[in-house]
Image 1 (cartoon, rainbow, N blue to C red):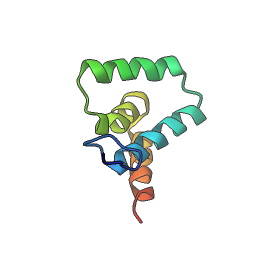
Image 2 (image 1 turned 90 degrees about the horizontal axis):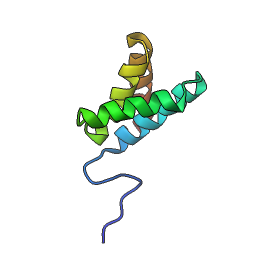
Image 3 (image 1 turned 30 degrees about the vertical axis):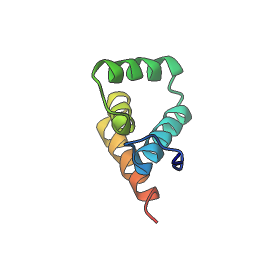
Image 4 (image 1 turned 120 degrees about the horizontal axis):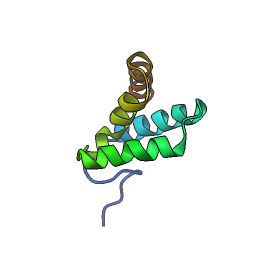
Length: 80
C-alpha cells in the first residue's frame, strides 16, 4: 500500500493548498456555505477535475482581480 501526503491519486499538492487557501479566503469574507455548495454542484455538473476545484471556485465566486491574486498567492506559498 502506498501512502501519500494528504492527496488523492492524480492530484498535485499545489492544488490542495490552492483549494484550501481559496476556501479560507471565502470564509474570511463571509461567503456562505450554501454559495460554496452551489458552486461545487456546478463543478460536479461540469465534470471539473478535482485538481481544478480551487481555480473554478475562485473564478465563479470572486471578481477576476481578487481570484487572480488569491490563486497566485496560493501557488507562491507552495514553492519551497
